[in-house]
Length: 97
Image (cartoon, rainbow, N blue to C red; front, top):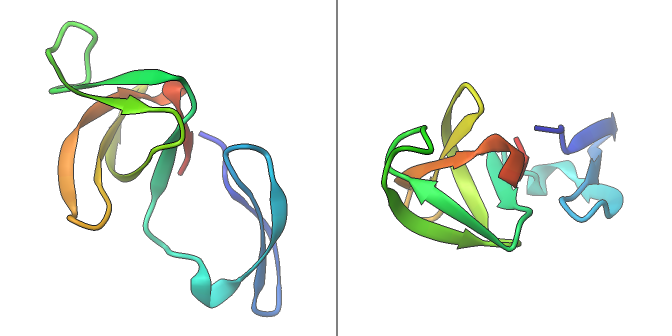
């Protein structure tokens, strides 16, 4: 997945978001928590990192999830505020790190 932080200057970080918007963000406002945005209209969230595993939920374009882990071409995602894991999404359906 592409990196969202490009360069820094003093207390500022130059960022690119999932829609390719760019700009400077005040560093204290940037979270160290890894997140990913869904870049396709609908993405299946699966119980385990395999297309053969059951779908437990669906994600829509623009939704942002916390990253809990990675395995091969799969990313383990969940709810950010609740800190709750949901399941696995293929890496090519996401943007972020």
